[in-house]
Figure 1 (spheres, rainbow, N blue to C red):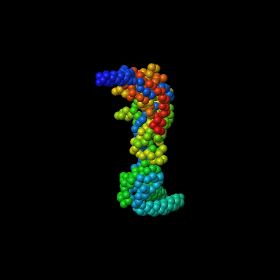
Figure 2: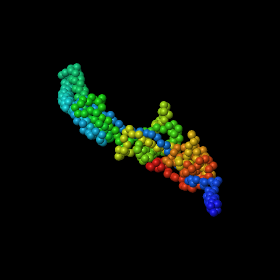
Figure 3: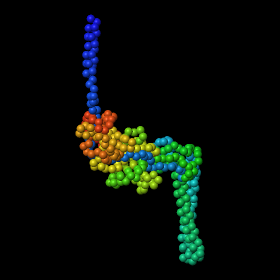
Length: 380
């Protein structure tokens, strides 16, 4: 009885083991990984290049007095906006008012002397006609008249200088803009043409200066020459993309022999005071117009040391490693100068699933992104 039971249990165990073995057949390959592909096409586009620049005020004034004296009043709020003609500093006017009164009195005296000498010269003419005076006396009176006339001109000039000196005791803003702090305060002596009182910078519009290398400048000359004031896109530190638009209004007349670069300048409106002199700025400038540009998603471009390549999927859904020559990035896309042709299908998403060239995949076609210009792709 025990022998029959043991034999039955062994038979059942064999059947169970045989059934388990049939669940996992050996040698079966896993299915090809799913990837997303896009078809290569050409389009007309403008190529943009990014540069680092600095914001500069078009007008900067180091304010110094034209006359010497003690500061009597500071009439502005430090760091505030001021208008052209606003009085910023007042120098003690009392000595200059006294000099003006003295000049006015001296002019009155000289005018009286001129009137007397004119009468003397006219009387001498009559006396000479009747031979009551000598010719020598007549010439002496005419000379005295001419001397007094010259003195009158000198007195009038002295009065004008006195008026100017009094006018210059009020130090006014020569431009509209933002004023710095007062470097000389009330009660301190300010010397003419030497003491720095404060600085003043214009705020609207602003300049952005940046430099381009010689190769980029050469490539962009045709495009820049065709447009008298091409637009550029500008962004500040902390800003996304290039949200501001300016116009290129100056290109230097020669390259810097030390750096091999040439200077550009863009002008942009600044009504809200967003830009401050001295800030760093990112500038994006158009450098080339292309009628048939190949632009692909930058995620599709891989790097092997210093070589760039993409994965192309053929008609049999087999991947092929294709070396490419890349150009500048345009937002989220990269320009391909050579290596791809219209109609090629490249892997955009799922590249991490491809372990070697020639690997089969299960492709799914997606539309090629077309964000337009680099500025638009960057959020402009």
